[in-house]
Image (tube, rainbow, N blue to C red; front, side, top):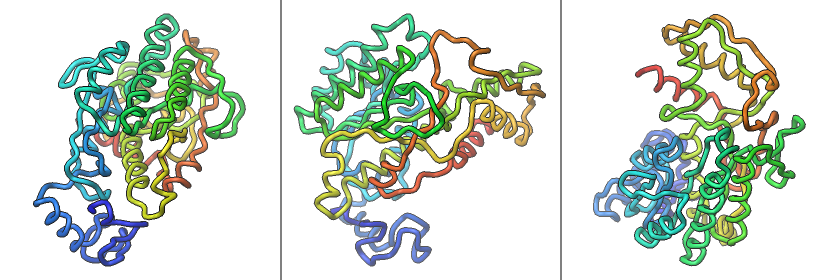
Length: 365
C-alpha cells in the first residue's frame, strides 16, 4: 500500500508532481500522503528505500559501495515510496555478520541464517594489480561467490543486484560501450568480474547487474584520496591522460540502485512489474567524460579552492606506457547508460554533482 503513495512521478493522493513546491519540499510527496503513511505504519520512521523487501543483505559492507548503502538506508527522507518494515543486514569479513566471500560454505550459512529476499552484492576482490598473482582468490570472490548467491536467490525466489566493471572490455576505440558490446578483459580482475556476470545471468535470478567505472567515495581508499596525499607531499604529479571514462561516486551508485528497485516495484503496469523478473546487464555511471589527468587537476583545484595546502604546482600528463603496472587497464572506459535511463525512467546526473559533494565532505575533515 505504501509503495503506491507515488506513481509515475505523482502522488496518488492528490496527483501532485513530486517536484511541486506546494505543501512540501521537492521530491517528498504531498503531506496528506506522508501523514497517511505514518498512520498506516503506526508512526514508524520511513526508510529511504527498502522498496517492499522484508530482509536485505548487503555484502562487502566495509567497502566504498557497502558503506554508501549503509548511509543510504539510514537516510530517512521520503525520497522513495517504500515499505517501512525492512531489516538491512550488513556483511563483511569481520563485523556483525562476518562472511569470507572466498568460502562458499560461509556464504550459504549466512544466506540460510538471514534468509534475505534482496541481496545487494558490491562485495568484490578489487586489488587489480595483485589479482595478477592471486587469480584463484580473485576468481573465488568475483565469480564463484556471486554464483553461489544467485543460485540461492533463484531457489528462494529472492532478488539479487550484482555489481561489475568497465574492465570487462578491452578498452579499444573511443565510442561508449553498450551492454551487449563485445567483451575482452585485459586483466585477471576483468576476467573474474566477467565470469561473475556470466554465472549470475546463467541462473536466471531476478534482479540486475550494474556495470560501473572509476568508483570513489569520501570513505575508503581511492584515487581522490591518493591525489590529495601526493599533492600535499610532492612538487609535481605525473598522471596518465590516455585512459578515458567517468568518475562514479559510490553514493550515486547506491542512490540509483534504490531508484531502480523502487521503479521496478512501484509502477502500475503489468509489464513494469516484471522489469527485474530476470537479471540483465545495465551500465550505470554519471554523465560526462574525462581522463585521469583531468580528474587529478579537478581534485587538486578543488582542494586549493578550499584553502588546503597543496604542494604540487604541476600535474604532468603521461601515457599509460610510461606508467607500467602488472595489470593492463582499458584506455576507453566510456559506458553508454541509455538502457538504464530508458528502463528506469531517469536522466542520470553529471559526474560533477556527486564529485562536489564528496570533495566537500573530504575537505571538511
